[in-house]
Amino acid sequence: MMSSDLLHYASYDIAQEAKRLLEPYLMPRTLKAGTLLWREGDTDGMLVSIVSGKVKIFRILPDGKEITLYIFGDGVVFGFMPFLDGAPYPANAQAVVDTDVLAMPRSSLLQVIKKNPDVALILIQHLSKRLREAFDQIERRSSRGTLTKVASALLSLLPEGHGQRAGLIITLPLPSRDFASLLGITPESFSRSITKLAEEGTIERMPGTNRFHVQDIKRLEDVANLIVL
Amino acid sequence: MMSSDLLHYASYDIAQEAKRLLEPYLMPRTLKAGTLLWREGDTDGMLVSIVSGKVKIFRILPDGKEITLYIFGDGVVFGFMPFLDGAPYPANAQAVVDTDVLAMPRSSLLQVIKKNPDVALILIQHLSKRLREAFDQIERRSSRGTLTKVASALLSLLPEGHGQRAGLIITLPLPSRDFASLLGITPESFSRSITKLAEEGTIERMPGTNRFHVQDIKRLEDVANLIVL
DNA sequence: CATGACGATTGACCTAGGTCAATGCATAAT
DNA sequence: ATTATGCATTGACCTAGGTCAATCGTCATG
Image 1 (cartoon, rainbow over the protein chains, first blue to last red):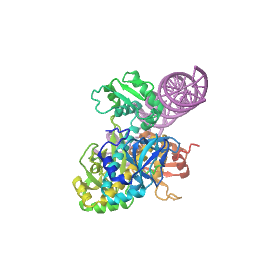
Image 2: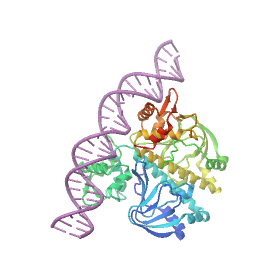
Image 3: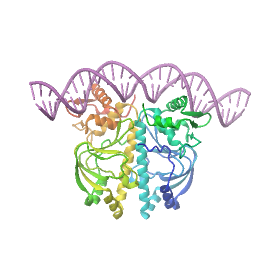
Image 4: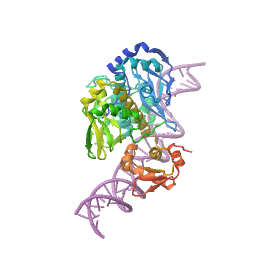
């Protein structure tokens, strides 16, 4: 089963704890939209904690297409992989909007780990989480049916307890083009799926915004779960 | 760029070191082909080191299709994720052939980690490796062109220094059906790609075996690299 | 207001590859 | 030897969805 953390915000204590430990070494820095933090293959980089903004982790295929692995949002800590196993960054990182971060150079991180082994445990948990998310990505990209992908993606964006909340409004945290890429589909396909959902009354577009009003959440869940018949 | 470790054998010191540390706690066990080591969602399991055999890590989609995430071979250590972050196993594990393993129950692993923090570092390296491989999977499944996938998969199975070795023989380590699933394609598509490669003289079938003779390695590399023109 | 620019949307088209079904080819079982 | 079983292969078919191109909105700029 997919846990469907499509967008990544730091949820809980792990990130907090990590930040507390690392704080003394973190340096504030502002990244203009479009800035590359590092490229796939780079061996030198930094550990980053996002204060506000969004960073996209992606790969470029030989034919030039890019595939988005993650979109990281406020509070997420990342960029530590090369420190852990010595191998280069496995993907590119780019700020998709103006982004404020706290950053720490390679050397400092190694110091901290030596001094405080607990940091290692925290990193392990981060890695585990990433790995689980990667599995979800694989599943997402392998399962067929764009409609399904879109529906489940929308569901994952619903605010907290969607028991029968009044405000069943979904806000895309990204331009739909980028969102589509995160789902491994084209913007056109994304749009078509939205149109289909709108036509059958499951959701309603809110023109001029990246928002949708959910009319029939039960139906949306059905579509997401591939209930064929 | 993909590192293309399609099949996973323990390559280097990490696994050795891990095994040395864990040895006292490991119990030999034999798994008949088809045995499930654990299911996705299980919270209780074990850490496993393969002595001989193969284990498939896979997920089942809601529609019943299964997607193969890894095939682990001799020497690989795996199954530790739930211990690290407390969450359940993210996928199923099944022996695909009769397999001899050394296994360690959950409780023991926790003890060892407490006693010897270095183990944590080793686990980190394992996790990093897995994560990188997962990215490769994502890339593999996202890139289009079955021919490309098959060609690069075959290349990754070539024995060591394929400078201009005499024996350019590729042996599929799995029935082609399973191999196809690892590539995220159907057995039929796999077969078709092989046929195409054979027709153009790039490889030659060796009937009755899971083997192929590579005639034109340069060409094979070109195909793998998507060199369109 | 007019113009441009950028993204979302829609339509028309086309193809890669999944599905289903038939056939072949081996080894295993009787 | 003969049948049975299981997988690989091939063929025919069909569709999801990628690609390309045209249109439409919306917002920013002069």
